[in-house]
Image 1: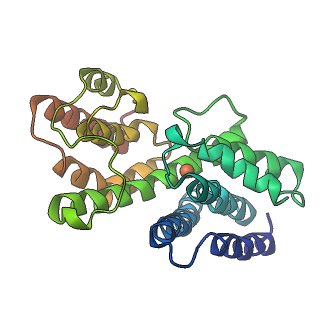
Image 2: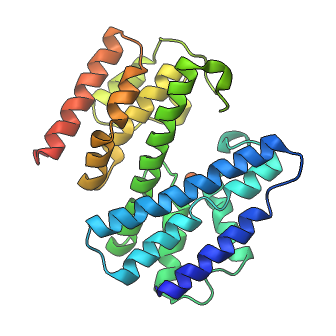
Length: 264
Ligand SMILES: [Fe+2]
């Protein structure tokens, strides 16, 4: 992808998002802003990952376009349903594809780039990636990794607010803040398996699921960032001190250290 094309996309994105803010609707504006800022941060993460992977300029621009487009569906989703929960609204990844086609954004691109962007956007939030060709898989993995980096960053900030200044907590809390956890989740994590959202009953389950995302991190660079920026340590700090959580924490810490030492 040419740099000028990416720049054009960025100008379009700014205008597109501006159309979702509404005068006097603070709740909407705050939520739209959350995703607008998330998108910009994921773009930055993507530039850094592409640099770490020593990708060509044109592939780096393609990767950044994927980052810019991955959550396009979040804007119509929130406007229509006033929630970011896919389970009670629509799959936001598919909504992103709808936006791409409704605005004919990919029409000028070579067919190969168009196909890569669509697949990477479509599966960025799926539990697992489907079978894809190597090149598409590479970009699909990149957006999943960079999205996770920013989500970890947001989670840590929000758990801190929830613990220290709960009256300032603005996220939708989907589960009761109980120290109990689902034994199936513990079992799955000890087997390096990803957790399905439907298994979550408590906030502790949700935090364990989030810790377990490390099994779905593809690039060692990303895993290193997750560790070195202190996201894992911070998440662990917000877990209750029980036998189950301690067993999982130990397992995950060993997994990360072994992998970063080149042991798996
Ligand atoms: Fe997303």
